[in-house]
Image (cartoon, rainbow, N blue to C red):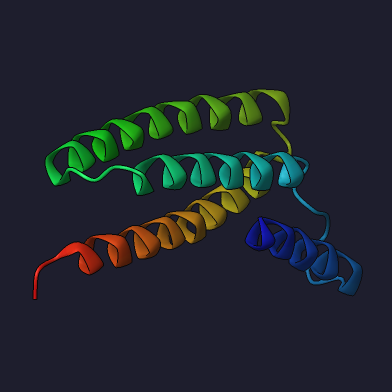
Length: 116
């Protein structure tokens, strides 16, 4: 959640400093959705102990996440056509950040479970 709040603060600072013309209209919703999805998926995957089940559930979660995010992006574009570029760019930046965090934490879990 701290990452989501930090991203929103960076957007607000950028707008106040004049670095960007206006904050994306869906910045709060995007940060909240990505943070919640990432936390829920990570917490669920972190509890799985069987490696073969972990892989299947991880791939299923990625599929569901991509479909849900696709629907969200389409809704953003349809609802705010003039701001679509900034909204989608903000979404993509946060998607990369949250996916990197998720993969990093899950990699630590998997690497920690390997026999040495």
